[in-house]
Structure formats: structure tokens, C-alpha cells
Length: 198
Image 1: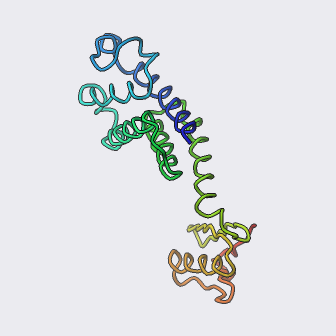
Image 2: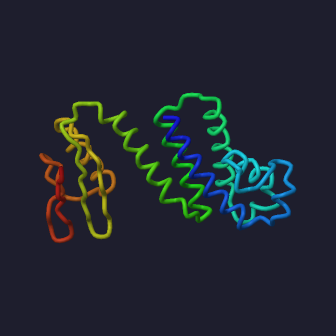
């Protein structure tokens, strides 16, 4: 787990480093009381602290308070990681998601790298939460009515998957004719019949 967090923090540092170097005058970087040395050597914490400490002067005009909150939360997670605290799969997913959101806002070239880590974390979280059950398979149901498209992921517990999909159809597409026995949307001139895929 810590290895995945370390990988995410390294990707974060690479993305932040390019952003800071491109937007902050070299004189400010070299005179920063927050950090010492060449910015190319700064780790994720040094970059996050620099951005936090210089928010009003350098970053608030380009970034929103959402990104400032992400910086704060990522600093906390980085400190927990440095003190070798354990992370749940949910926390690891949140770290990867926060890094991706921040790097996306910075228009970083590292977004694809962190997205792969986030999706891997999502897969592991899904397997922990759902995959351990004897589910009998996993399927996704799609339905389109006019311009409205709905997808429902069902885990295949007996008939509950069909009922779950029926509830989504009833909630998202009220009044759509469907076969109550199967939960499948009836095919008429304005409704597309769904296709089940295993």
C-alpha cells in the first residue's frame, strides 16, 4: 500500500515541479524560506508547502479554493505516509483521486500517469468491497431513451441485479414502459431496448 502512495506522491511532485518552475520567477524560488536548494530536488511536501505558503501572492489567481483544499489534504496524507501510518483502500483511492484532480487543474502532463494509479486503486477497492462476495458475475446494463442514457453496474446476486436496474430506470426515467418481470425497458418507437453484457 505504501508503495502505491509513494508512486502517487512521486507523480504529484513531478507535476507540481513543472507547474511551479513555469509560473514562479526564479528569484522567488531561490529566496524561499520554506525550502532550500534547487526546485528540481524538491519533493511533494516541499512543493505543497511552497504553494500553500505563497498562495495569495502567486497561485490564487490561477487556481480556485478547491485546489487549495486539495493541497491541504494532500499535505496531511503525505505527512501520514512519512510517519508510516496505514491507509485503507478507500484512503489510497482518495489520495490518487485528489492528486489527479489537482494535476488536471494544473494541466499537468502527469495526469495520464496518475490516472493509471487511480484506476488501479479503484479496481483494488472494488475487489475489496464487492469482489470478495460470491457474486455470480458482474454486468453493466445500458439503456437510452431519447437523449437520456443510463448505465447501471450490477453485481449479479440472483435477481437483485435486475431489481437494482429497474429501480434506476424508475428513478432516472419515470414513466418509461418496461416489462415488470424482467426489468427490461420495453422496445417502442422512442425507447431503445437495452443490451445485457456479461
